[in-house]
Each structure stands twice: as C-alpha cells, then as structure tokens.
Length: 306
Ligand SMILES: O=C(O)C(=O)Cc1ccccc1
Image 1 (tube, rainbow, N blue to C red):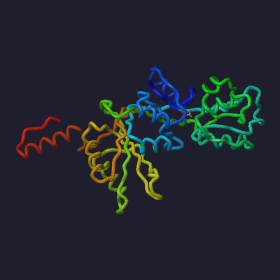
Image 2 (image 1 turned 180 degrees about the vertical axis):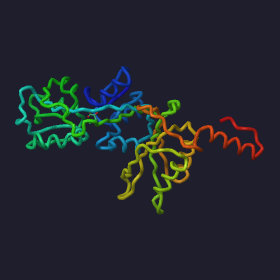
Image 3 (image 1 turned 90 degrees about the vertical axis):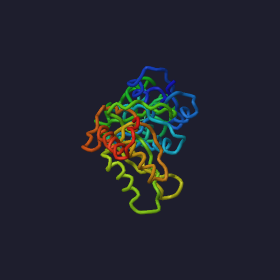
Image 4 (image 1 turned 180 degrees about the horizontal axis):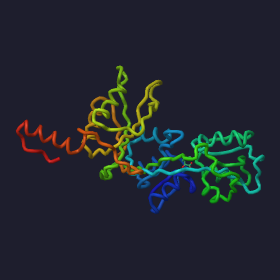
C-alpha cells in the first residue's frame, strides 16, 4: 500500500497516478505519511519535496532529516497549474476568505493581489483539503486555490484557471521506503543526504563542498536548514548527481563521513528527467577501477573483487 499527502485531488495524488496505479491511501499531513512508512503501516509514501518557485518543502526536508532515516526510491516531476475554486453561485466579489496550501499561495500571490485585493488568504492542509473545506455548505471560506481535479472532485466551480504567477512551475515529489535494497544505478541517478557539520572551525561548509568538487560530483540542490537543537546551528540538505554504487559518489560519501559530525543517507534513485551527468576526465568508473588496479599492482596483491 502506498500512502500519499492527501486527500484525493492533491498535486501529490496526481503525481502518484503518473507513477503507478497500485493501491494507495491518502494521509492528511506529510508527517503522517512518513511516520506511517516508518511504522510499517504502509510500504511506501509519496510527498512533495521541492518546487521550482518556492524551493524546498520544509515539512518534508526537516522530517526526513530528523526522523528515523527513510530512503527515497523514486522521484516524480509534475507541472502544476492552479484554479480558484468556489461553491457554485459564488461571484468574484464574494470571495473574501481563501484557503490553500502555503506553496500554492506562494505561487499565486501576485494573481490574488491583482485580482482579489480584498481577499485574505489562510494557509493550511493541502490544496485538496482546502477544496473539501470550501465545499462544506457552512464553510467560513469562500474559495480554494487548488488543482482543477480537486475542484471537480469536491463539486466546486472554477472562477479562474491557470492563475499561477509563473506558468512553468514544476513540483518534485519523492517516494520513500524503509531502508533496504536500493534501486540499481541507471547512469542517471540522484543521491539525497543531510550533512551535519562540525561548527567549531571556519570553512566547514567549504570542506563539505570540496568533497563533491574534488570527485567531479555536481549538486542539484543544497539548502541550509536549522537543526532545531540550538539557535544558529544548521545542517545542509543536499541532492547530488550520481548513485552510491558509483565510485565517485561512494568516495564523496566516505569523505563526508570522515569530516562531518554525521551524514544521513536518504537514498540513491533514478532521476525523473533521466539526465545523465557529464563525467569529467579522471572521474569515470573505469578510471576509478584502473586506479584501484594500479594500487593492487604497486602493493603486489591480487586484484580485489569490486
Ligand atoms: O497541497 C497539495 O496539493 C500538494 O500536493 C502540495 C503542493 C502544493 C502546491 C504545489 C505543489 C504541491
């Protein structure tokens, strides 16, 4: 059973339908999805992690960083487009109170300011939960910013469609499981991790970045997040190109383990866009293997199984 950030009609639900038609169940918050996976109540869970306008989804990044480690086994990229959904009969001038998810508001803020300057916006739940709340006859909310499917599902009318400030917005979702066998390397993979650095010396972040740079490993996302343990203390949430099964990435992870206070490995999995990294001279698997072979020769030992 796959859990997803619900209820039915969320963008996460749509992302899930592009991935599989396996049996699924909605859960009301990102934390509930991740905790249900940890508890073994569901096999895997799909949650939003990043979008092209707002950046990282803090609820997901922080829960993955701090909770019992889970691993990402797949990612989905979904173009998102928003509608303003209302109970049938509601006119634009009647839309005084809007309910939506914080990331949906962040992506439609200018449109709301320009078109409904009298409206106040409340952030909470998911976009589909907002649509369901607006559909209640005695709802205190007049409109929801959500996906068109959510408006249809909860019997609402669309007062406006395609209201995103940035029409090309894309959201990335990840499917997580309890740690176990990892997806095999495909040559177009990503690795996600959290680096908890020592804070007692200068240059600690530079040392972390060096571990990637010196092995030709490109980053696709890096964000500092508060550790929530002490004011001013941060960890780094990182996505990098490559798979832990590849020597460049293994070396990077080993290097990070040596220099960091802790490293939380959050998975190596195929990239949704299937983009293969450009591997610079000196960093290919064959060159790593040749270097190991050379050491074996120098030490006069039989080549190891690699
Ligand atoms: O609330 C939803 O529908 C979600 O799945 C989270 C979300 C919100 C806004 C853009 C993309 C994903």
